Each structure stands twice: as structure tokens, then as C-alpha cells.
Amino acid sequence: ELYFTDIKWPDFRRDQFLEALEEYAGRQRRFGKTGAQAETV
Image (cartoon, rainbow, N blue to C red):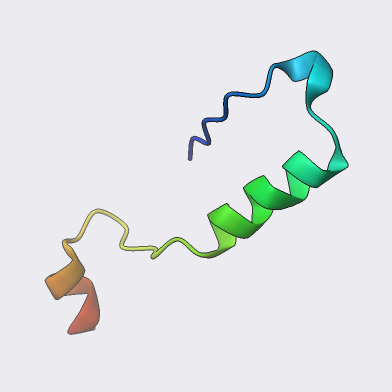
């Protein structure tokens, strides 16, 4: 998984890390399927 931000590494702090984790946690895990295929499982 990739996460992109405009914040450079020296300026990356705890708040930005928590924001990245929150964004990651909100992702729909489909494991290669389309959204429609994932909903039928």
C-alpha cells in the first residue's frame, strides 16, 4: 500500500502519521476484485 503526502520526511510528525493511519484504515480491501465483486462475497 502507498500513501502520498506533500509533507517532506523531516517535517513528518505524529499528527501526519496518525492521519496516514486513519486514511489507510478507511480503505476498502478488495484483494484484486472490483468493488461489485467484493460486495458479493
